[in-house]
Image 1 (cartoon, one colour):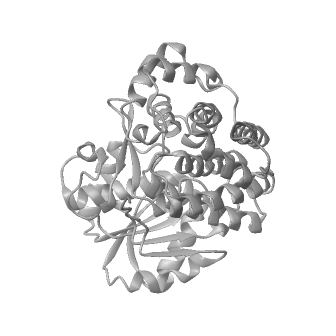
Image 2: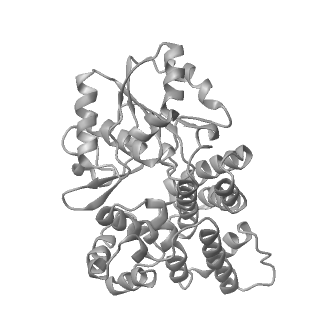
Length: 383
């Protein structure tokens, strides 16, 4: 019998309006000054300001670092570390989607371990726990606020470095759907499909076990029922709240079961072309899972039920076919592009993309390990 280790933040606050309730939890940490990690858009839009108002009212001291890019870079991380030290901050508060969350994790790890962020690429490389992190999420997608994973772009090598590190997990996660209602439809769609990818990859990976299956299947069901609603009407707070629960559940699943080749390939598209991660995942998901279904068809029966299929009397292949078509239909409904060429991806780069995908930290979690030519063929299917 296998032994499993289940990672989850110590405290998780979620639900409509929960942002206003976080100050006492932060004060209980008995820390002095926070580095608030965010980006220019969230500052300009006023979304970060809602967090700052809560901090101000409670008398919580902070300084703001808002230089995070959509695909955060090594420079973002080390500039943040310098800013943290300059202002003598002893913990971090991240507000945003995956980019600020990942940047805060990276800053926290470098602050307590030293060196360069590239030193920590891989699985459980750091020796010391990160500075405490309060992770306030604003997108229903990446689940970075509850996971031990973070991704930083090495701008010189043009690759996304994947870090899987138990020392990077947040102390407190916050998921308030009211912070998500004004997100553009395209961002809602991309992050929602990212969440679906997390859940499905967590279900088909060899690392899955009953606890992760339970949360991942619940996430799949919630996403198919609510994502299109949030894209059509961003102010549908009930659907937004259901998506918050979905990303929390899916995040816990892949955080402990692992991911696979959808993420391994999507990371390379982001590294070379600076493309939105969720869009890349959404485009790759049905094609990678079509191949995975040839190796673990039995895994797709439960996914099909969660996606709305009556599976009684159906074969495993019929269930897998249903899941793949349901993914394609949902992607189309929420406006995901159909071809990578529309996003500037070129045939000449496929060899490099495939080679780097095979080295990605997520690749070993796939149900089968494709050859380089098979990876190129998968990219080519959506070129």
